[in-house]
Amino acid sequence: MQRVLQHVLGMVLSLGITLCMGAGSIAEGLDSSNGKIEGEFFFTQSRQCINSSAGFGGPSGLALLPIPPGGFLNRAVNADRGIVRFNEDGTGTFTFRATQINLNVEPPGIPVTVSEGVGNFTFIVNPDGTVDIEAAVTFTVVAGGGQGNTGTVTGIKLKVLIVQEKLLLRAPADQPAVETVTVTTPGGVTSTFFRVCVRSGVSGEIPSR
Image (cartoon, rainbow, N blue to C red; front, side, top):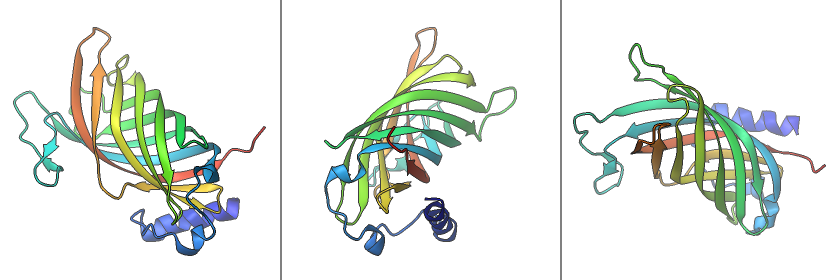
């Protein structure tokens, strides 16, 4: 496993997470059975997001819409980690802890936010060894900026690549998706914003106990 992990990380560094997802020989022998990745995996991933209070639109669906007074547009980088469970029926659940740095916060704001949460997803294993995932999460901000806030994220799309049926290489979805984030403060004030994210990282199988 260590040798496989080193090999995958080498691919990430040399090719940069814009991998051609035609898995070829890596996925040789895999079929479209969701049971191929049934089980529990740890995961770590980096995530970069453009957040907009106004949202995205235009013909591509990704053009920035005008930001009204009082709105915001920012970029944030994140480090996520957690445990994910794939079920044979094509569903799954995960828990996570995420640390975010907002690159556009000015003094005396707090640029760091730490969140914990849970998610549910559906997935499809493709014949080429890639896996398409659609997910939604609920979260609580446990430290840093916005501590005490709770919220949801919907519309998450992700692609992973199966490596030797034990390791998953996480990569951006083929088509970038607009995600919807709803946040509620401890005082009960709710707001919604939108984001487009790219994700990359690795997952490794947790042996059955």
